[in-house]
Length: 229
Ligand code: 6GU
Image (cartoon, rainbow, N blue to C red; front, side, top):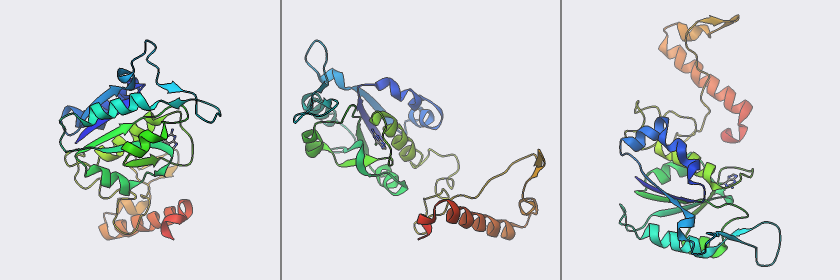
């Protein structure tokens, strides 16, 4: 999968070289291209923002650099005729595992990282396929949200996870019921007076599966009753 990211803070994306994402990148499973939006400014100050029409607080990202950036990036010879263009914004639809799965099926994604009060709405109208929010809180810009989405999508790509089953068994990944994962334990069997639930040491695989399912249901009922409703 090819992933292009346009931002005024490309240094935010250093974690793309680490851990699972770093391995996916090094192994060619994702081909990430970072672009500094200021490349497409033409004044000496490389200005990307301006005051909002109609007044109000804050600044708006100018349409011209974004337009030029998107023309350049989408005009590159990529793995598809055109990429799917995603704009992270708190006013978008909620990101979830279903959308991650959908994005993971695309050959080419472009993430447009806004800052300030957002990007001139004409850019969004003309170019965005999806406006996506992580949740009901406000970040300083789209960079961290893009990292979140890139990680969620990348771990779904074939060959990225060591164990082929680990993605399928995740919380939220089932086709029907969405249950939270049960608690997990490893050695030692006791620490600070706290023991591993004895069933996990019993060797009874049926009993272990039933216990895990029950823990998933209890946990989901307590923490995320909305998933059961
Ligand atoms: Cl996608 N962007 C910003 N700036 N803030 C957010 C968000 C996105 N999702 C939740 N808060």
